[in-house]
Length: 247
Image 1: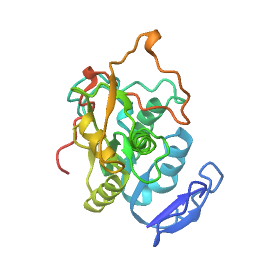
Image 2: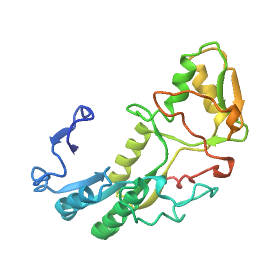
Image 3: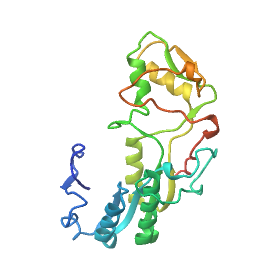
Image 4: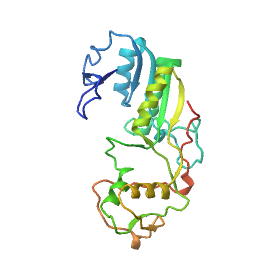
């Protein structure tokens, strides 16, 4: 296994060959372009980066995987949405969702039926700096006895996937030559159940004070967290992405 990257975000896993390269530089793929590859996994979405990799490696790669995102779906309000849901139209490639759609389409045009498109939902686990999931674990840890303010958890659901499970699935899918489009998301879980599980890892008892969003201006909390507090979807957004059938 080989990782081609700038090397600024951390070390590679033991046993992986690391090729240091800025993918926007001329000759970025010179050290890997002369080999035949069983699988390439594309994590980028900037048009020039995606195009450069395809030009250099598409002809010598047996199977290609694009790690995309459920963020590219046009609506967050469709319960049970699956891979056939309507996508945004890529009119602004500075926008994350638009760029992801464009990356998918460019790759499909270049590699055809050798392509796997994986659309993860919220990714949690080691290395996650977004604080979208770990916020709750951290918040409960710093308040071992006090009540914690949370959104009204009644009939509210969340979905996430551990980055280690995602990586294992991507590698397995490539080895099996899986192609097509898949939402790679975890099962639907009640928000209350997730909060209780996070609490048990930190403390013996969880007490929370719920507020029903959106709050009136006079009720809004005034604070400035180091990272944004995760924003729950409205109940109409339940089950944002339907997990793909076992693949």
